[in-house]
Length: 221
Image 1 (cartoon, rainbow, N blue to C red):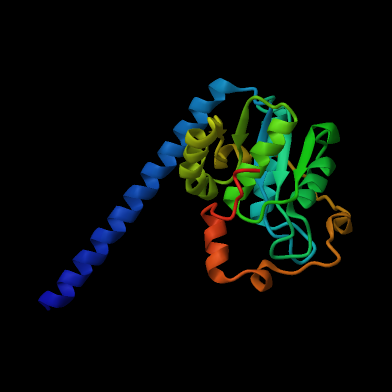
Image 2 (spheres, one colour):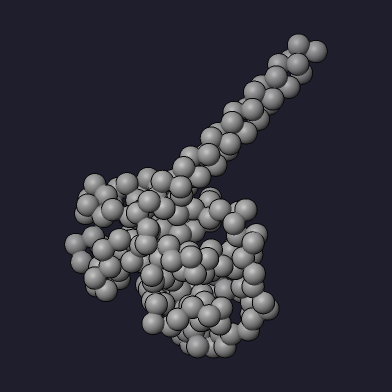
C-alpha cells in the first residue's frame, strides 16, 4: 500500500510541475508579445513552414498564416516572410503559405518566400538572411506558441552571434479566434517539386536531429 501511495504522490507531483511550467510558459509568451508590440511596426515577420499534405492546409499551417494576416492587417508588420522547403511533402512550404496569404488578400508585394529551410532553426536563420537582403531592419518571429517557445533560445543565440535583434510575436489564441476567414482554394501545383525526395530518405536521424538544433547551417555563408 505504501508503494502504491508513493507512486500516486510522485505522479501527482510531476503533474503539478508540468502544469505549473505550462502556465508560467504561457504567461511568459504573453509578456513577449505585449512587450514586443512596443517595437512595431516591424519591417517583416518570419513565419515557419508546415508540411502540405492531402491537398489542403492543416490546423497548424492555417493558424500561422491567419496569425501573420492579422499582424499585417493591424499594421504590426509591413511584410511577411514565409519560410520552408519541400521537406516532408513535395510542396515548398513557404510558397504554399504565400499562395494562401495572397488569397486572403495580402498584397503580393509584401509577401516573400524563403524556400531553403528544412528545420525550424533554419526558418529563423534563412528568413533573417532574406530580410537582410531586402534591407529589413526590424524582424520578428510570428508562429504558434509551442514553436515560439522552442525557438527562443535559438533567437538568443543569433543575437549573440550576429547581433540579430529578432523579436518574438507568439500567436494569441483569443485574438486568432476573432480572425474571419472564408473557405479558400489555391493552385498548389505552383509550389510542387517534381524531383522531390523526402528528408527521411535523404538524411539520417542524427543529421535531422542536428538540423533541428541548427547544426547543419553554414554560418560562414
